[in-house]
Image (cartoon, rainbow, N blue to C red):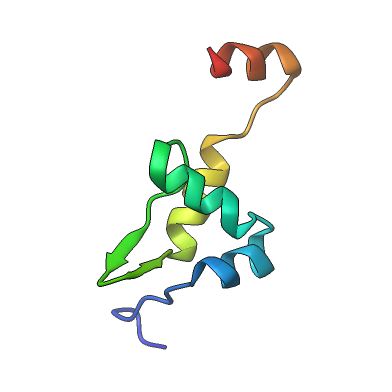
Length: 71
């Protein structure tokens, strides 16, 4: 795959590769708070880079930090 091509993942592929259930991805798209996605017609697609950025943004060192972030 060339550097100009991006691998786009369906919600099912995201579930299989990253463990985020399809229903959770749907909820995040409705209310916000999840990874960025691409809307292509009726399809919703994710890039591995956006998923990795989301995962990295949720990293915490301890429960106090996690509680603070949730506020």
